[in-house]
Image (cartoon, rainbow, N blue to C red; front, top):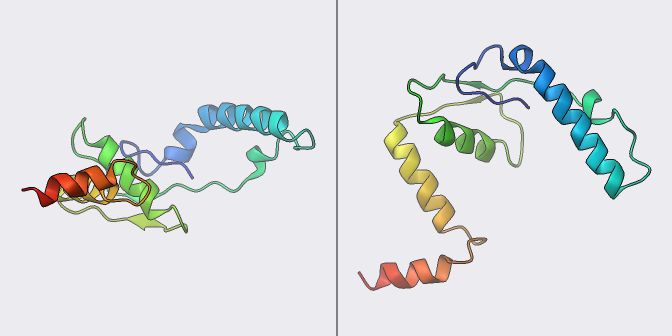
Length: 115
């Protein structure tokens, strides 16, 4: 999947050369890990462009990218809808801080309980 919050409609075409180079690099890495890996396999994977609202500023791309990745972590969704960017930032922070995989989660909970 190709995600670009600045060029949302033509991301696959716009980034074609970069994606091909990245696919080749991934193939090389996978070959190191697994000597039977077929070089060129990653280039044959299907590609799609995520339909998402184009960001309206030059500093919110991280929020857009994190939301797109999180929405697609367990399945592919065709579009990501972003509401209020301030609320989306708060949601991402809370979700990540309280995630079971956050090694500092217990410290955060202790800090919050002392307030």
